[in-house]
Image 1 (cartoon, one colour):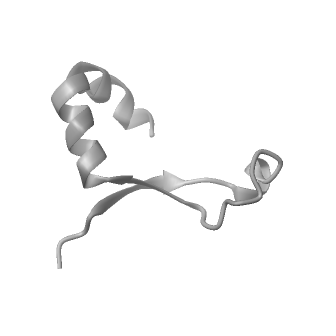
Image 2 (cartoon, one colour):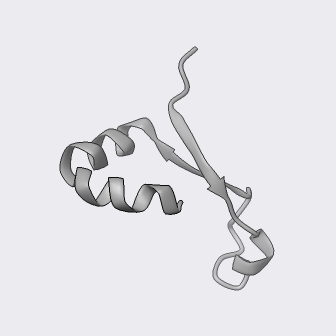
Length: 53
């Protein structure tokens, strides 16, 4: 089965618990649909900033 998302990193849930108590995972993901949208519309920005993720 093909994955429908890309794991782009992890967050420290403890650092963000004051912002939202609804954070249930440390994984940061992007769906393939959103990834394709970004590539199609914002390719230059994506190439500049994705490596920072």
